[in-house]
Image (tube, rainbow, N blue to C red; front, side):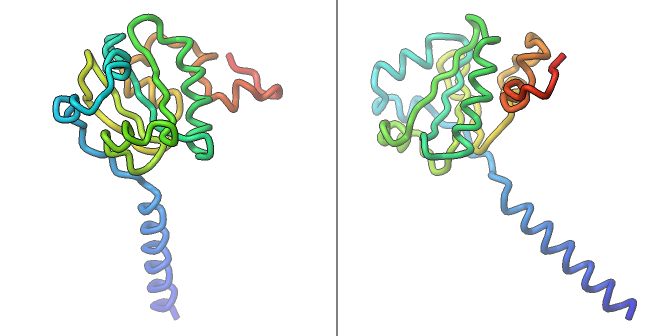
Length: 159
């Protein structure tokens, strides 16, 4: 009887770990902008060079995690200042640009430093995670660091 429970608990643990692992999206390798520069339009090239740090988020209006991430980024955008910028691109309207950067899953974020792509992340991230990734976490207030869902909740006091 003990052996049965032991085997079944090991199997259950294995299945749960596999199921949880399937939801984790791997981080794609950084894009070499020099390779795709000829395909970029001048407007986008100007956008990624308009600030020292630029976060480009590829998403769509029909994508739940993208809409949720947009709310987080909107709260973060107020705290950025002149040193950083967030650019949101709808993949339905900009299919060629999304294909240029090999956007296969959304939300897909690419971090540009001084006009060069340095890192990418796929999937929803909180405002805190994005700020840490961008290197901006230290200059945000407690109210702006709370997730958008908490900030908009009238029953929660953010201090």
